[in-house]
Image (cartoon, rainbow, N blue to C red; front, side):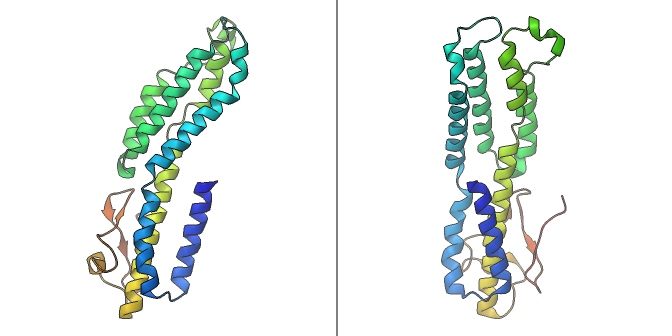
Length: 212
């Protein structure tokens, strides 16, 4: 929910920037402040920990059931913890390196997942949790993809603010990002998905993104 609200806020701000003349003295302090938006790895890690604890608590009822051939909660909770650990590792991976890192983690993790064969379930150790594990712990990338999409939106918005502040002061857009440094930006802004400087239209100020 928090991530969705952040995206709505950023997109709304972009519309305001493109349709209203906001004084540069208002925009410049906010550009630096907004940089904190994409320096939130610890917040994401805490959210992943909470997700793990929530899932574990949600299945707490099984602790009242004695372990047997079909239900072995300790083994499952160990796998849940490993899944969370893998997601937290990916949180530290830069977005432009995420695809390869995710593939490597996904391959490693999926090798540990059971191949569910329905007719074999009556003969499968810890069958209850093996089925549950195959459903809820197979995608390591979703959270990280959303993180990078949000980082992209944050950096776009920061650059748009700098471009509009420059235009307010100079009645035109700059030709290169370097013209925004150091008054409007401390350094040029990179696209987090490519690790390359954003490009923009010098006549309209529109930020151009590479085609996916």
